[in-house]
Amino acid sequence: MSRSAGMLAPLREPMFRRLALGRVTTYLGNAVAPVALAFAVLDLTGSVVALGLVVGARSVANVALLLVGGILADRLPRGVILSGASLAAAASQAATALAVLLGFASVPLLVVLSVVNGAVSAASLPAASALTPQTVPPTMIRQANAVARMGTNTALIVGSSLGGMLTAMTRPGWAMAATAVVFALAAHWYARVHAPEIDIDAPTRPLADLREGWTEFSSRTWLWSIVVVFMVVNAAVVGGTQVLGPSIADGSFGRMAWGFILGAQTVGGLVGGVLASRWQPRRALWFGTVAVSVEAVPLLLLAHVPVVVPLLVANFVGGVAIEQFAVAWDVSLQENVPADKLARVYSYDAVGSFAAIPIGEIATGPVAGVFGTAATLTGLAVLVAVATGVAALVPSIRGLTRG
Image 1 (cartoon, one colour):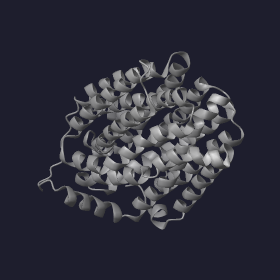
Image 2 (cartoon, helix red, strand yellow; image 1 turned 120 degrees about the horizontal axis):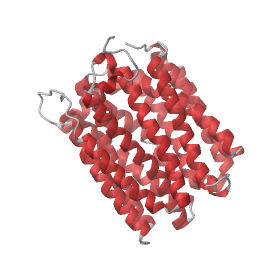
Image 3 (cartoon, helix red, strand yellow; image 1 turned 30 degrees about the vertical axis):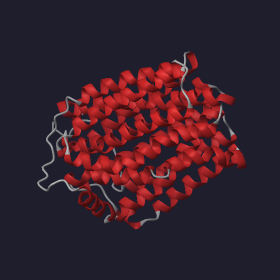
Image 4 (cartoon, helix red, strand yellow; image 1 turned 180 degrees about the horizontal axis):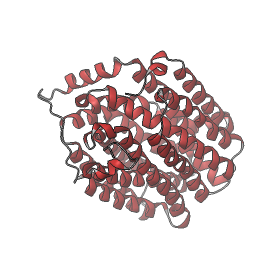
């Protein structure tokens, strides 16, 4: 049997296995944290505008520092960066939990702690993405990306449901305390990843490094076109789901059901990861981009049919679709971008893809206040459908094939 055979073959590689465990625990914490934070803010203020400000502050900090994270990840040991970022995330979550549990939480304080959390995430995201191909042989890159995402989706399934249950059965502060422990565990696994580092002879020059990364990013039309499209898609989906979703849940089917609805998408992602590890069409990136258009359906259901079963089904199908894009996207980058520039390209990707998320988070509440929740969610669904439709027409996206 060849080293590339078998969906789970990458787990035989010790460094990949440790990286995967670190990512799984990180995503578990990242799944619980936003659910707990959303309901903590709603308990404190009862305002979706305040909720948008708190979650938007995290996204602003994340976007602002992602390019710095990309430079660091191409220059420093990526395992060390991930371990340090996880310890900082544990500390910020512990501080948030104390503020909520001891009753001195306020919107300004939660905004500050969200900024810290966003900065930590900015340091870790490019490193985690760029480290994967360093931990497996080249023949296993597709399986490794699929297995990594299957693990993280499993963590998101458990975390989203657990976040909903903990906030319904106890208090949001206890859920936040649990995430602090989870991030500390992630730091342990990341500290044990000693993958071969990228050999870079040139001295560190931040501006030159950024220009070099930008050249790699901007020279590929398929790459920056996808990023522009997902700038719109991510803002629409996150604004509708994370800001208006919890408010709709509180007024209808409840917090625990909302946790399971969020978890349904990651169940779909897990199934989609199995599919992507075994089969992808030759034009996988185009296929995955078109599939993401189904993300409009849950937004429409929240707007007009906020019923648990249809939302569970729609989110499950959406999870399967998103995973086809996500695996194709990682493989496309890792096959076409030089390894010593990969983290910087990932950081430009993340900056562009996430740039409008704070706008979506902060603006969704006030827009819904003017036009109504249903109309706002319908408009967001239309944006998702139009953006993915435009991407499907870009020649370089249609023409890119797997290596």
